[in-house]
Image (cartoon, rainbow, N blue to C red):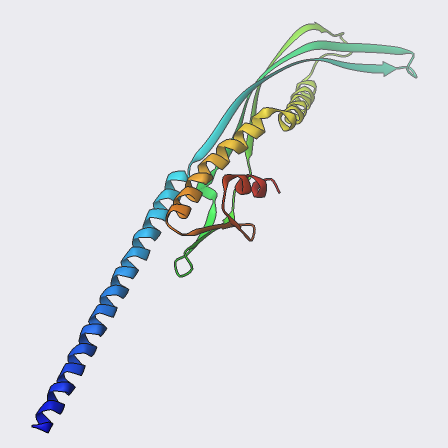
Length: 209
């Protein structure tokens, strides 16, 4: 009788261990499924964000181009000049296909490793008015190249101080915030520049470091 009781207890313990092991494996399996699901969801969101963000602007300016050729110890000079009217379409783009990131499933962390710099494209339409030149100092291809180079340099300075770059940065932050919102809602962390980003304000500040 005593042996029978021991046998029953032994069998009960084995069955209990098997049940607990099964439950643990089932729990582990479900947990792994959740991690895989969350990872796929985040990757899909990054793919959705990974696009070309383009902000367009228009700039105009009027410049006077002058050039003087001197001869005979500067006693004789021949001048050429023109009024140059510039209308330019400008785009500031962020190609988020080039963004680099790392997904740490174990620690539930997304780390943005690199955000591509903005790509500025300037397409100027240059028109010349009131052209004055002489046979000894005529407009050449070199003059037009100089004017084009000067125009682009002036426009680049204007772009730096304009709202166009700010608007482009705001659109970039808006796209990246979609990742932040998703990670926060899922209990994951988003990191950039060695910091954990918890708000759009922090993301904005870190992008402008």
